[in-house]
Image (cartoon, one colour):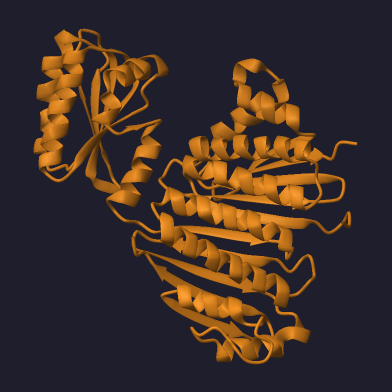
Length: 273
Length: 140
């Protein structure tokens, strides 16, 4: 539903408040034209309606705004405070570069979260407020040289999603070990790709590594999988099986299935920090 | 590396701009592992960046629709496929026209894609999913 309001004298509405069906908590406020001292007072009364409407979050789209007077910023600040009191927030999106530079000089970025577009703001809302999980799937050739690239990619994803320090390093290590094992014990056929699925949650990450097994190494791998414990192996060939022990040690949950078709390893790592 | 059977790298990620630099870096790193030159890899990652940005900004109107990048590395070329859910026919048509017209007015990103690739194909299927296919030949 969209509700338009005339703030300025021209025919087109200078403020449009929209509901977002997939996010009932959010209202999208699209503003346009000059937000000067004349329009600021009317802006305040119009926008208060959205707060009274039971919404907790607001995205103010400023992509069509050509000028913002400090008094209008003050009104937006007051509105943000009202949303904050309800446990929500008001964020800004789509500010053009000229206005953004002025806003940065005034320190507006220290008060408001600013996003390049409404889409980005919605994404952050989905992750930070709705805590919606995200899925990433990777498939890569069984080449040992690709593993560091995959590890770097996972590291970047972890940083994006707020997994930092120890958590991030542990997840990277798990991915590294799983992928190295998949290359070492998997089929060497260049078409038998290794698949890595990640389901990233606010609280945990679930990993599934899948590959086609090398028939010659399947039994050896099955033996490792059945004996894997959190203890580092001491007897026999002590270099073998350390990776899996490390993965199990670093994981919150670990399971593996080695069949004729392939190997599937499932790991859950709960966020600790 | 055989010419017929490609090394295939694929990534599927939520339609968020924040993921694109990571995907771009991954493709570049993988291409270098597969013996493509740093220059070729760098230019290919540019393509991936532009195509993914287009897919996220223009292709997925609803939130978090996945974007799929598929990179096939042959001995003599790289083929990049970018699939974005929910692309609109008019956006695809605009993109197709921009590629054909070679007009700078259509935006620098389109010009860049055209410049860095040998062929560009755009299609949209019955489910409104857009498919962009780019071929970039290895430089001698």
